[in-house]
Length: 279
Image (tube, rainbow, N blue to C red; front, side, top):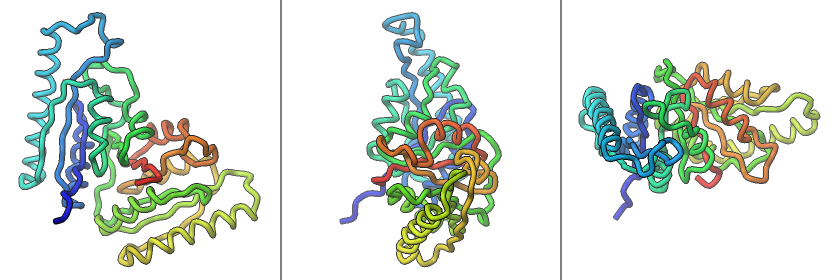
């Protein structure tokens, strides 16, 4: 008996339809159920009351119910046959979403540029979960991004760090979306030529192995020299999805160290998937 397909989890806040639409397309592409989550718990530091009065809790819950009702309308409009569950959680968002990530295929979030709810929570939720969640996290900017089936999935690699998780997800996404996989090798300025060639060979070897697993995925390899964050941000302008690796705790040279991660997520013009190496 086969195991059930892990769900695509989308954490929604008011006025983030792009994240929900992307999550719907992700669930459809992989034949996965969708879980739409809204968490209305208030961290102690965000409230002058401890505990939070029941009246305020009821008001926050009512906001969450309204957001989920709007989400139901959008799901019914886009794909009424999709298997979907709507979850209203009383936990604070970080706690609720960390629990959801433990059993999700991927987690989809709106970017931190949009307030979580009523400007009560100041924590950078997307940035935190992108670094620590147990599953890949896809951050979707609340902007117009390419939805043309002829788009591409962009995978960024540096040639030094184990990239099994990001490469796996990138090939899965390109295969499911029937689009080109653009493998972008980022090289910092001033890198010695011999090191550039060694990294390029490493990347080519890694990609070749996955091409055998996914023979129907067309792969385009390219090199770029320049600031890593800027290079990745430019790649988001014409892509359906950009895939980057999550930094290891002890690897400084990895292209997505924490400051770069925040910069990329803020500047992105398309969804960005941040993937743990163990995915």
